[in-house]
Image (cartoon, rainbow, N blue to C red; front, side, top):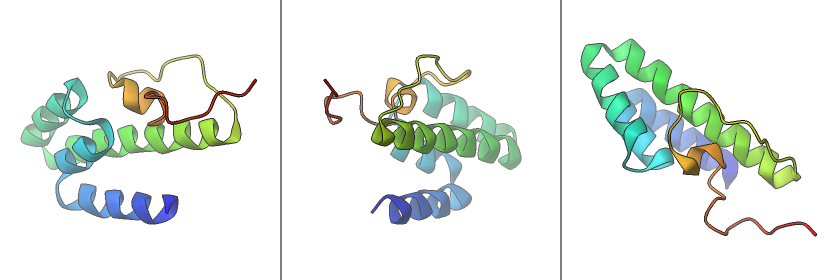
Amino acid sequence: MGAASAVLIVLITILFPPLGVYAVAGCGADLLINICLTCLGVLPGHLHAFYIEYVYYDRREQAREGRFTAASAPGIYSDRVQQGGGGYGTIAQHT
């Protein structure tokens, strides 16, 4: 499921970068920044979207393996992306 969803998100991002950011980060500052960058040029919008998706899937993989990153990724304002989608009680805490 993880690889299929990542491929789908990448395909969506290639067609329209803000939609890929919305799928990963939700509606917030990251989406607004990506819309502005996409209006300025397609390449900046794509680069920003792929950076957000890379951080999201990297943090998600780290959380799955039990490695939690304490430092925030620079330039990302969504807690959902910073925590790999597990910030809302979806990842069991190891005791």
